[in-house]
Image 1: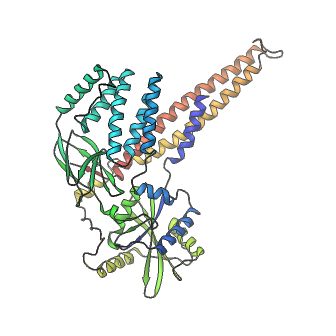
Image 2: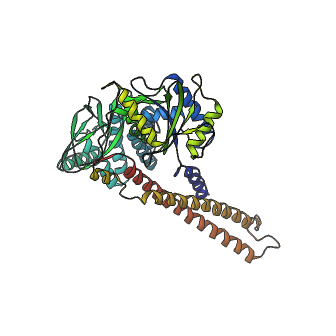
Length: 487
């Protein structure tokens, strides 16, 4: 019944495919950003949205993601898993030890970049290459060493822990990678911040590192806040990547969480914040005044398209909004259906208001974000998804994986039941029970065998389509959403 169990596991994981996630954040002018009153109203509107739809991100998860700490495990937990892999290897469970180290290496790459995490990754990659070599997987061992040598050309292999043959192999890989062409990658951020490439510390920006051509992950840290990573495709010519630290500076984690962003720059900042949150839609909550009247404003963005869908307002009284009005605002934002007490905002009027508020701010006010330059036609064309069919194909593959997982579960259970029924036709000594014919027993066994084959085939198809959905989903996100810099 391992097939049925596998199918059940896939079924439990499948709802994540294509699931929408909604983030609700507060936003106000810099330098202070959202105050306590607006933060509380943001919490209340988030609760009203959660009453009407699923997938609403809660505050602790949003803070973790905005800090760039959305890894599945902590560094201490991954270090313990590394020690467990060593123990498994000593117990001659070589396959289990290698599998654990692969998971550890993957987890370390998801941690916020730091010198400690990078040092742990270097140790893990050396050990993983040795384990793969012990299992006879020479190509996998070489690949691990080459990945390591690309970032750390002088990585060391301890002669106390590894045999001479492995040390010679590591030295050969270092020499081979050192002969490959390299290009200089310069990381800048407009101000000194700690820069990292694939987790390797580079020091304060601007910083430069020579790397073989390939794809790299560039990130930075500004105090406790980690600048979202940028995927960089480095070819055989030097290049520069400019990191966006404005979003990190605008974060106000204890205010909603919220952002301190001037009105004209809010749309771009909100879309970037939504990408950090892994959300598909985002509701921005702000406060606006019209003479003596104060209104709570809600605007919902489609983050995949980077477009404002709709905006509405409800009147505030003594700094608060009644629960029925908050519910009406949430319903209007989520569905677009007119709601009582909610005043829709014309997008042209909203743009004019943002420009008026920007003109009223003192020049060079602290905390303003720099307006990005208008994209040129070539830049706009390059920003279009190269494979627009990837995302719908990923959804289709995910749906097929779901269906096949259900089929595998059903047929696995049916096979189990039919085998039991066939066994019940036999006495304890293996002879057919009185009243049972050989034909009936053979038919029941044949039916059970057929169900078992179907379960195995459906489970195999589930794995194939689930992997296809994951790969297409990753590629569609990279092309359509994740920032990619090419030289």
